Image 1 (cartoon, rainbow, N blue to C red):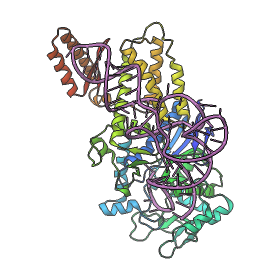
Image 2: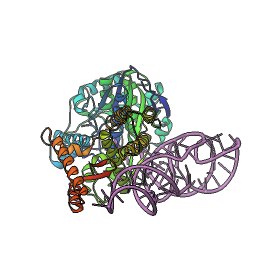
Image 3: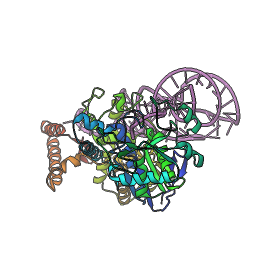
Image 4: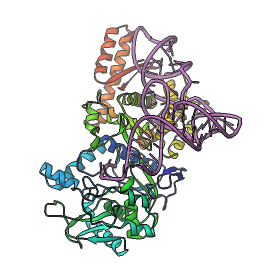
Length: 497
RNA sequence: GGUCCGAUGGCCGAGCGGUUAGGCUCAGCUCUGCAAAAGCUGCUACAGCGGUUCGAAUCCGCUUCGGACCUCCA
């Protein structure tokens, strides 16, 4: 197994990864609240964890990856005092709450597929786990860390902090929280302002409601993640991820609930937080009005975009930065990513066509290159370093394709393994050209590529006969179709633009 | 106001005590019917000011600027 190191946001240190029950790994990532379309900032987080998931599997772990769908309990505005996000949308769109949930869950799944983000092993929903949430509340009450007022149940942070530590993950001091917490408008039933809701009473107008020992109501936000992670991964599991903005209060509350319900300290070994996608230096957020939907990005239909970019370009762009750093979104950066990706994919296509020489090239050490790829990923999933390393091999490949450099047959085989593993399996970069042409009948891809080979040959013949008009006609027509021709020392070839 | 991050060349973005990161752009060259692609060469930066050290973009202090969280947010 590779010696993987992870920057643990719980301890703020880079630590050697040790699975509780190797080779099995339990990983939980906070999924979306499905009340509106996802934007690119959301995509970045899921993409970051997609890479982590892929790499863990790649180096031999068997990962149970749980990513939830929050479809109830997440309130608008001030915590515990606002309207349910999904209920509000349902009212505005005059739909059943479950229609809202379905609509935006479908959208979410479509987006994940477009960006080639793998589905999790389990994708549980909050409404599907009401019974478990109620019983978790009962456990928390039995253990003395909650209290009921008028059909509402709250978590007592003060009581909890007497027995356990609260605020470790987000680095908050309980006293400061007590005094700094924003004063709530109106009188609150909470004993302390930092207490949070486990169960809320539903009034008559509330659309989403379930019976409970405390009357008709609905579960609080934070609770579903505690309950579902425990249910599918156990009282203790390896990795918990999510966006940086969830660290407080969501993840802090989650830990407190897990501990309070199960009396298991340190339920999660490694916390990983993905950083924000920014636009002109500001966090992309719906409330800022600077969010892009994936669709706007692909079509280019947005006032800040000069044109559209393909999903794989966006994927590559996001992986050129480290997941724990903010990443700034700009046209120039996207264009650079597009060119870089195309250089890389063209080289891989060239590699497929390469025929090696019997003797190996002593100046090329594929296994050293490969190890550096592993090293990059082992160092807290450093995809920018991985990509930089992959570009080094590109020089060998292109030089060999130009016939001014030799590569041994075995070296070529090793390079193919390397690039297929890190580009496809780890980075999840699929060739977009072949994806679209695969939509047709089985085998149409072969026919298309055979036809292209034929056209390239015909053009070479034309060139040989000094029929440059004919040669250029083939080149220009193909170019209009998105196919470009490369002339090299060893003859001509084609590739998707 | 509290807590915590960050400031890297024309752009994006790694590095976090001694390396040419890498990509993109730009200029020149090679190849080419032309072009593109590809290869080669060049462009050597770390916000500012002090300090520690044989040596600092990397460690410490101060200053300036930016951001995140403390409310819902991936």
